[in-house]
Amino acid sequence: MCGIVGYVGQRPAVDVLLRGLRRLEYRGYDSAGVAFFRGSKIEIQKSEGKLENVEKLINQFPESAEARCGIGHTRWATHGKPTTQNAHPHRTGHVVLVHNGIIENYQEIKRDLVHRGHQPVSETDSELFGFLVFEKMESGKSLKTAVAESFREVTGACSVVVMSEKEPGTVVGVRNGSPLVAAVDPKGGVILASDAQPLLEYTREVVFLEHGDLVLGTSSGISFSDLKTGATVSRSTSVLDWSPAALDKQGYDHYMLKEIFEQPSAMVDTLNGLLDRASAESFPLAAQPAVELLNTAERIVIVACGTAWHASLMGKYWLEKWARVPVSVELASEFRYRDPAIDKRTLVIGVSQSGETADTLAVITELRKKGFPTIAVTNTRGSTLAREAQAAVFTNAGPEIGVAATKTFTVQMLTLLCFAAFLGKRRGQSADADEIFSQTLRLPHLLSGYLDVRSPLRQAIRETAKKLLNLRGFFFIGRGYCFPLALEAALKLKEIAYVHAEGYAAGELKHGPIAMIDQDIAVIVLAPNDAWREKTFSNLEEVKARGAQVLGIGNPRDESLRKVSHFWIPLPEMEIHESLIPFVLTPVIQLLSYEFAVLKGTDIDKPRNLAKSVTVE
Image (tube, rainbow, N blue to C red; front, side):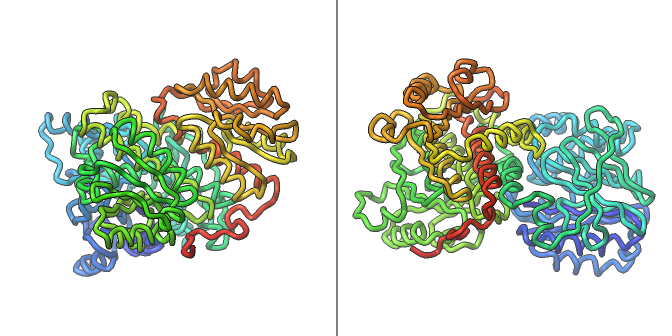
């Protein structure tokens, strides 16, 4: 959710930074700051609150208009309070930086830095990167080399832009997850930003950096290199001949596709918002009223609608397995008209992307008035649900324009997983929490490796969709964690491709739905290598024997599944705990629906009859 702008060139740098940060205000933020060269020294002015506060501070330095190099940042507080101290840019000696994303191994880095005598002053993990760069530059290395070598010591999906008083007039940026865009200023110089909006005012020719790119900018030009090898690389320029709406898509054909690919960064921002990064524990939820309510819950009821209901069903598996707390997942539209048997020891969680879903909001409002403990899980700060619930937890997915929820589904699941693991640790029930936590922190980076427009995975999905397009119906089946995913996959296909699709627990097919199976029906079998795989495989053979066209989705080394399926989509090769497999499967089922919709020519971002926020019953 954070915004980055960097500039070096012939224009007044502070003006470029402030104008660019204003274009990024749509992301939401609660602190901001800029750093600029004042002679040979870097001046930092930052403040909690809005950009106007920073502008007032800068006005005390009339000579700031002479600055020709600087970096700026808007921050939406995740871990660490929205204070001036935690705001970016951060300084370490002569090194100043801004940062988006998550440093997964921050605990190890901080421990080593403190052991070497350094004393971080903020609550953020961002500041630690500056110490790494500072040490390497003090040993005689250039800013570019120091940034590259420091980044190799960091794990996590993040981007940084760095300056140093030892090299005035130079900015170095790295993208390894969070977006970063670069452009040459026609008047001379370079502009960097976390998305394209701040650049459009100066040029329409931009470069969308790839994962692992390092960019060096000076007043005389720009260069790109590979972060790992240091080798110079060339990057093609995109011409932004776009309307404002198209610009927001960053070159993608649809918002939905862009938002599918944004899921790794959305997960990073959500983890930053949930976790206490100063703690050495696994799944350390940051202290807040919602955590206190979770701690005392003897039973949990989750109310939601649509995609949020499917995410909640997934959460039930984790909460009951790890926390050993009874969980009921309810459709809000039904729950509100029942006379449910709950008491004051029951925690009610309302899950809604918009925070304005009428049925979910009505349940939370009514129960709060009756004195029941309530939590809102939503992507929208200031929403009615967040205000009506006793406490709110925000998923930090960023703006989601496409009506069909994608990245908000993923971060809703992630939030509930963190709730479950946190409670499991507190109650002594989650024996492998440490390993799951470590893998959870690495997940965004793993996902970003295969979520690419040109990836073999997407090509395989597109070709499969072409072959199945003209069938008259689609059944998605799965067991365990894959059952909620089967429901969500069917919903996505209905929402954007307008075809008949249903999701079933695989064991339920023989209790009625199998009567529908024939050669004109496709059965998409979600069968990753988990505890339910063998049972799911048996159900696959049942539908194949009755003539169904079977699409298997599973482990790339599962030869028996591949052989029995008519069509095959292998999941990306990665070794992770089975409880995290849903995060690997989710983009696959989303892309499958997307490719069907592209082939059918539907209005993918604005499906007929649907709205982003369902504010009526």
